[in-house]
Amino acid sequence: MTATKQQQKDIQDLLSTITNSLRAFSLKLTGNMNDAEDLYQDTALRIMTNAEKYNPGTNFKAWAVTIMRNIFINNYRKKVRRNLIIDQTPNNYYINSGNKTVLNDGESEVTFNELQELVDRLPDDFRVPFLMAYQGYKYDEIAEQLGSPLGTIKSRIFFARKKLQKMYEEIMRERSSVA
Image (cartoon, rainbow, N blue to C red):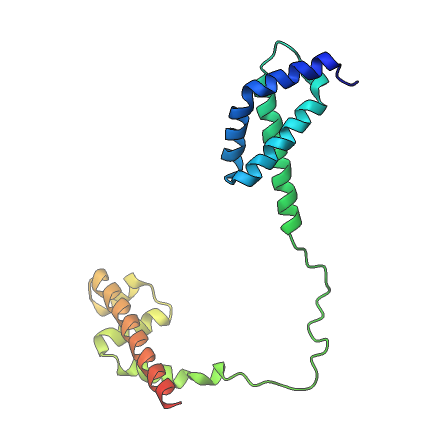
């Protein structure tokens, strides 16, 4: 069922009374003047093409705003779907890998022995709680075993980590300046 010429004219008159409100709402939805204008145009077109669906005497503005909101949501969903990339390629990890092996220097850069040497350089007050924490003891267990307050143990482990980090950074800086 198509709208009569009178229905079309009535809808155009009603639309002209709320144009400013619809434009403001479209700007609020999109946050961009160009997108807001496009949304307004789409909404106006949809209102005009569906003029026969409007029930005279009901709230025209609410009907128009609902149409605009639905268009915005549908456009947003289309945009999200368009940007969604689904990788449907098989997991052929070894295709064209060849026979060459590339050595990874990351594993040999800092060895466990070097880290152990750094830990050994820590004062006993920091090294012992740090090693116990590393071995899996809980803070309260360490505090009980060493006969120290829990807060002291936590701070010693914290400062041990900070000191190790600083020592490690110094070694890395020395290595980079030599290379």
